[in-house]
Length: 369
Ligand code: PMP
Image 1 (cartoon, rainbow, N blue to C red):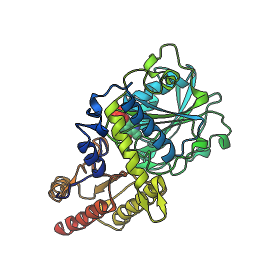
Image 2 (cartoon, rainbow, N blue to C red; image 1 turned 90 degrees about the horizontal axis):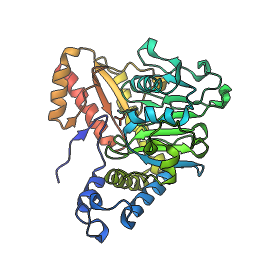
Image 3 (tube, helix red, strand yellow; image 1 turned 120 degrees about the horizontal axis):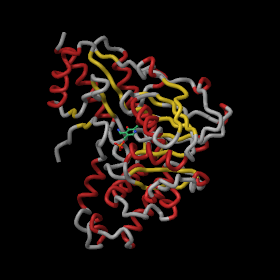
Image 4 (cartoon, rainbow, N blue to C red; image 1 turned 90 degrees about the vertical axis):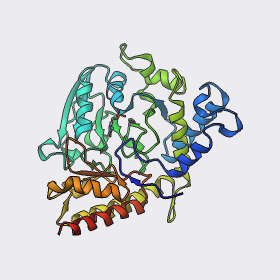
């Protein structure tokens, strides 16, 4: 088979080829059942075993402690912007740290259900830094503090989660980890709830992962739809309503792929972290040594997953993108709110793909000399 192009989409994003091949092979007949996964009852033993395996594999990969529940929901990250306050705010005060487009959206949505305060922001410098937690003005009695731990559009990432207890707050930390879940370990001791859409690092769109501390269940507002009440979802093992069965199956195949990954002495998520560091370093180092390209994010908070960059001469943008496509480097156009380029280099992007991008960037610069 000829090599597929390298796909730098921010999401829905590339899926490991091995996973796509396996899904294709099992499309008409999963495991001798005579049925494709899309055709199975979610209550039958075949799909129940697929879902149970996916959950167990994810728990092992991400080292999710026993006092957290893993939920497979629907509606994506944007629905969680409403579902989280409906479940955790008790109609009181909730705090947001705004570090880019996604946390900004979260704060706005929460205002429908609670009093939402912005307690720190990097807006003044164009979302290119992260406000140090020591300066956050957490509200007394805040029901939770929300951060987006990796801002997909602006390319800033928390490399360490804030320790709210050390800041004198008992509020649970809520993280939107949509765009870097499974790219690195999670420090669960600092987290109350984590959510993310699957379509970047976990598989196809359609399933939303929620990992929630058990003691936070059971306090939803009365207006919260039952299908979005974490207590109800947890009590029904994510099958209160028909779950997105095929997306869960695909995510399960990605989890098995992740478990097989090795990098030096590392396996699983540790292997992914090592590989992702290598990929990000390669691309940022190239950009930083160039007079032709620029990345504007402060070095200590640059995302390992989403690398926005600009050509200093923006009149060459269209030519850059057309040449990239000819070389099999797809979906590099930046988000419309930022412009320029963005290379999303999630788990499914191999080092060779980032090397191919850097080689192209170098060659393109030469053609402009
Ligand atoms: N949060 C983050 C960090 C995202 O990157 C995205 C999607 N790009 C969303 C939330 C929204 O996700 P969805 O479109 O699945 O609702």
